[in-house]
Length: 265
Image (cartoon, rainbow, N blue to C red; front, side, top):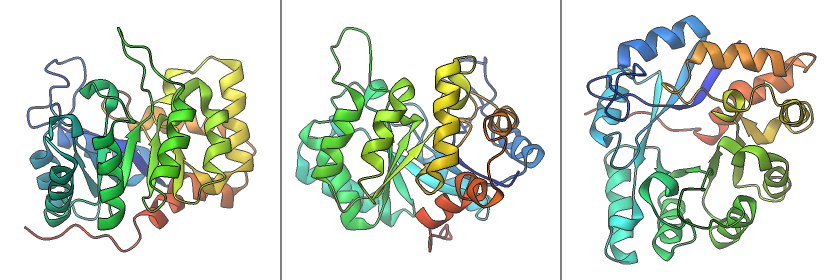
């Protein structure tokens, strides 16, 4: 299976969130990609957890393998005007997009600075990778598809890759994505996290067979290996036409990042 992995991470010391339960080293990821048949991947930073510098340096070392995505925490920025400046700097540093992680960074995805960041990315031609698993302890969280519906309407000029597809509410998200040409539904992590749920397996199979131009997949390495994600995808796509599978596994992401190349240092 030819794969453009939608979501991978590496760290400078191979530790993941400060621990050794996963191996997040760059050589480990490259070996895993080679074994799984993944020729390319989004290499993604997470603000306050995975440094932008590690991501861009790794991408420059392997420019044909990685599309670098910067981490950004809008909560740390004083004003919406400051958001514009930071997004412009990220573009100048050579990143193809930004990753927003409201849960880990502790902000409301509908906060004005988050919306400003998404809008600024559209102006700069950057793709937004939005983690859609918003729920966190101690805070009542709005229904994820409704949140994304609001963001899609507020920022129609920004291409967004909706990481993890909101998990169990992926079918509701699907109805939103099919109405908005600037959105893509991603099933990284969700592929593995909910394995064994008959209903969600059937939902994912439905998406793969009926809406192949709107869906992407990935591993969320090092949370899961690329090889494990590919094996899981093979189970869920039995009987899917080869042309549809090609869209899901790599062509949709190639179109999303068409024209992007990692700049030289």
